[in-house]
Length: 201
Image (cartoon, rainbow, N blue to C red; front, side):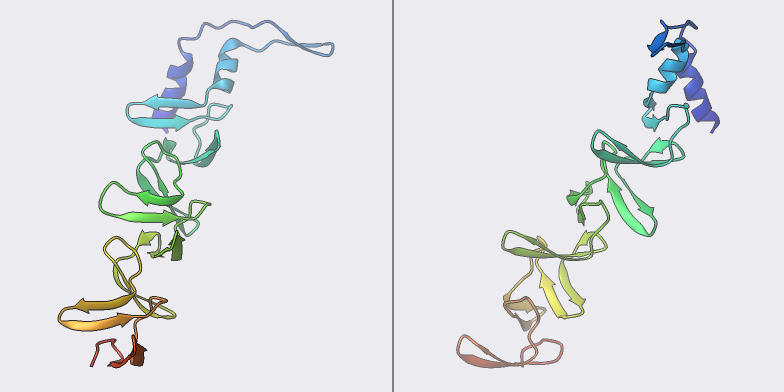
């Protein structure tokens, strides 16, 4: 808090106290000190690598801020950048510039994420073109996944696999909807049997 107060003081200490030309509203003249006008207009302040957002009263903002069509999030007055936040039980990701991300997000490592249009992380299926992806708490899934409708296999690039799959010496079959086959199935004119765990007999 002391740091935030210091930032406000530094922002106005070099302003020369003076009174601006009176603004006329009807028959009423209002004289507003220039330093007060400066604080009212002040919004963004950078200190080191951190950004702050001040309201018209010079108070550092906490939580969400909507600015020029983008959303930003502030903790202890500091804008969150390239990091995750949890707000009211929902997770969000803020980019390098502090902007709340939507759609596909690359977090700078090896992970891909997906956020809804409101910025909250998605759980469930996402279709891009004719490809399906599965997102769990914002993270793009790879390998085997299980949901309420069965088992699925997601390729290393996140796309849902269909057709034959060989893994660890075993054969599996992923149906046209991606679900792992169990029991007996007619595939290309031939009957095959699969265990409950999907392994072909």
